[in-house]
Image 1 (spheres, chains in turn purple, red):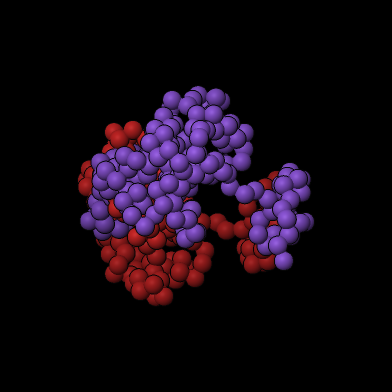
Image 2: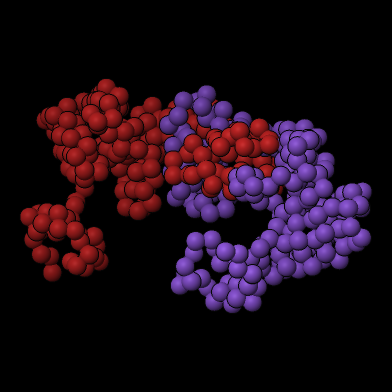
Length: 203
Length: 203
């Protein structure tokens, strides 16, 4: 497609945008032409904002969340319970859980999930640093907030073996029917598991 | 949303991406995190490719198509018929028509369409330069390849009055049922117009 563009800069921009996941070449052209219609200082500001992803994003030394310095605001917040560590796959999961406004502990971002299919093993993830954190704390709770698929369960099982020990309470997110969901919309796996994991009724 | 990000650079990038048309804040976050996972030289290359839209895209002095210098490859191509000018709204339309491989004339990119609703008048578009081109050529064909909505028809009518004259043949794209389309899929306006504009059958 690139050689059809009479402007190499436009062709390069379209090719760059089309390299993003879920963006096809037609959308990429639409977005590039949208940018091109903006005043040039807006285009430069846009490009600089993206460029700073390469230079200005740091990772928290404790939990590996993105942040502006050595420590993220969550780990730095003395009001958060540093003895409750929620283990997640990615930065996005931290943002999702923070958006609930319900969690007062801290996080540990693995940076991925164990996936032999994609060649991602335990050493590619922030697992050793989790083990050290847990050991240093001695008594703590570790919450596995991982996805419910095979990779998530494999990772949870592997983590369990690495961090289990005296004083370490390990929990995982509740799974079941969505709150407010009717039975007719649930898939049979979720419904079956929800039945199996039934809870005492609290009137 | 921005203040929720523990990294200002990430927040800025998400905000920039979400400013694109048709990209919501969730998609913007997904794309920003995708970029963030790339090696930093790839991120920089990506940002530079977009930044060059502000500096390296030029416009053809004749037809106002994007290009790398003063003249676009289409206007510079001596094999193209410079006496047939296809008038289009945008760069994208030129790419669409070029993709058909059927057109051997040249173009004139208006840079928009007359739209009183959006405050776009004739002086905001490349209409004076079209008038000059047509006058300089004397005898030529001008093809209106504009959209079939009210703005497109208004613009065509206005252009007609500005450029009509001795030796100037003015045509417009054929409209009707899509080639290969069945009658049951056509909207009634298209079907009615196609009936009205019926053509001699060529067996």
